[in-house]
Length: 267
Length: 284
Image 1 (cartoon, rainbow over the protein chains, first blue to last red):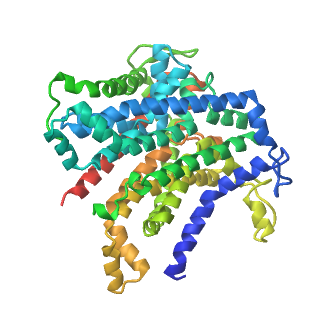
Image 2: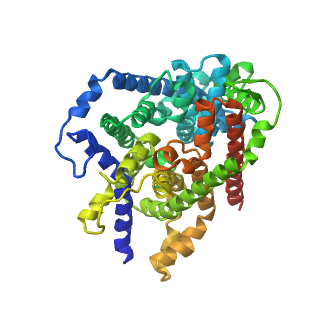
Image 3: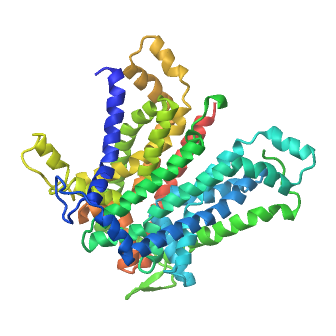
């Protein structure tokens, strides 16, 4: 096979395999009957209706959305000042602090999860909603920390120097120069943390698996105790939400740059 | 824009909150976990302070040695498969036009954010006898009758590779997109075939990135917790499953903490290795 044909063939094949689970989920969620059969018989939106009328599933949706949005804020509250401080000053322990912020993401999550379990059990907050929010906030600090640091690196030195020469104070500089320039990176860091928190299982399970049911936990439980197509509905909605969030990021931001590519001007 | 130290103690105020949060909620939990791994387990689900190596000694039973060996083997295999497929894929991706690159990236990020439980669930369906892919093959005349491919080792590998593939691509994306386009072009001008260019110019230039990615993906798949339960049989359960199982269902926190500490040391050693490789590459 010539090289010209090989690229679309190979990329298309990979894309197809990557898309297959999504297609199956969509099929199951639209299947009219509860039993899974191939080929599917009949289309219906009844399982979508079921999701929104079942108190258990709705509660899980509510928990997941609340945890994701609050823990994203917690992650930002740590990442933004830390990224700024590390960018602004040359301090010796900077690498240590940055390493701490990145570590949760590099280690297998089960380890961090067990650390959180030991901690919350020791302080007596095991199983509480707040504990999940803080745990996710710390676990996902890496994402806004990395995106905001990227944004800060892109601020031109001349701008900051000019502001300094004209006597701007630290706080004024942060408000009028730094914040407007890194705002897109703050949003994208938050978006990454939000979407990943929605889908996170092991930490939520270890910290409060039996009291605060998030959607991934609810899906796993219902897989164990009998199958329902509502699971597929939830999965489809999650994928669509993720695509919408990342699509917006790509629409209003520079996604390749956020993911570490260099634009030609940087060379 | 990094220069100087903060002027006076007030300059350190912005760093207080992040440092405090990370210390209290990240360093202290690990310290507690490390301490618990040496504690003495009391039958019935509790533990008392102590200092003993009993929890670590349990690794050396054949049962846990086998689980550890199996965990390292599946993660290693998944990492190799992902990099073999992901490296040429990422290279092709970075040569696409910007618009199509962005579309792929949105798609890959969406797949990457899929929860393990959703991946496990959809693959167990795709590999099932009643509603799976084998039905398609029967319709196409490739197979005589539908087969059940899950649970099993192949299903677990499929799931792990699916989980780790987008991650692999996103790790390889920065180094490959920064690869000087003139390098492969020069090789092509000198008459090398695309395949030859790829293997003699692109791959050697990215050796460091390839090794670093292998290790990162290896550590990433080591953390898979739900896939071994959803797509594998009990003999395919990995260290991650055992850690959670011991902590939550067997209420043996000291032993599970000891296993987690061990897994952490292995991961840290491997991550340290990637930094060492990265540092070596940066030197001229």
